[in-house]
Length: 420
Image 1 (tube, helix red, strand yellow):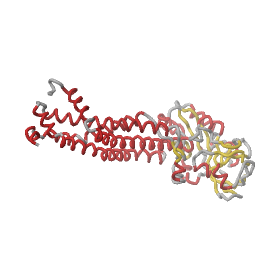
Image 2 (image 1 turned 45 degrees about the vertical axis):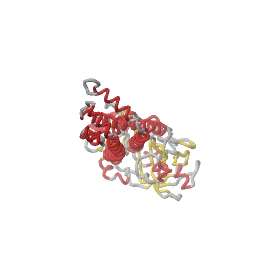
Image 3 (image 1 turned 90 degrees about the horizontal axis):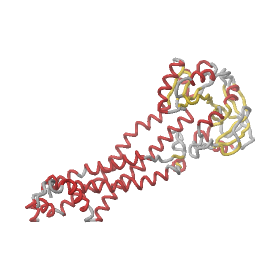
Image 4 (image 1 turned 180 degrees about the horizontal axis):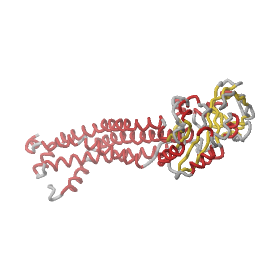
């Protein structure tokens, strides 16, 4: 029974056989660790899915990978002013050509976002969003849930008095395709501009902020309406690889100088918040596993108590205290490993399905998340990193916390044990 004869392999074999001596107790241990690991997998996948949704929303609708605005605009950005175009109103296409020379730049797109007052509508205010629709569609899927352009009825507007509105906006205001939207906006020279575009389409981006508040028009049409000449309110830059957006940000800032504010997508408030809270979730997972590990701890203590004579027999047959501890510790490791594996398998299947079928956060929580840049539907993130991490956490934490009761077996005197 010593290491010289059987070694660690023999102790592992004994431990593996022992865990099946009381199947009911063993199944309880498997279940405790399995449920904890299942929780970690599911919750990790949901959190990562939310992070992915926020990252994608910020990149598609707000900053791209890098956004360029003037320093004056940045100071008053909450009002969405159009009086401060990028680089003092220089031709945006010439600026774009200079930016395209930077390695790793995939696309440079102009955008205009400004407030509008509606003249004859139950909704009094909306946001005008002027974009180059053709180029935008080459880069982005505006409906992240269905991975489409988001248009559910009609067509996109051309370079004329045309616009598309969100389906929520259309329902609330009672508008349909062919109707006009009389509105008023403030131009770059502070003059009032009255406009009445016809609705050519209705979109559903599954993003409540846009579906409820935005009117999308052709960039050049809005550029003329707001007297921006050849300028643009912002430039949105997309990189070949988002991981290199920091390098592009620095290069663009050097190119345009101090008069421009160049922002990387990862500097967005919500993106930064989600990065900061990730350690909190890891602590929560640790606590949950610790609670589940107490069942294994109690089980090991009971095993030692019930098998006290067996422990004495082991000692009489020549097993050292270290070998006895190893047997009970290996039993704990087996129970943790098998239970964690079951949790990973079930969790992997559930998150695999969730990665293909989105969870409707909007249906569950209404507009609670309307302030967050996140789609109404999120996909669970399915990747092997989450599964392996959850399994390792389950095995390591549960095993470590059963080391102390395992050590208890070493202090049982063989003679005393046999008398009981």
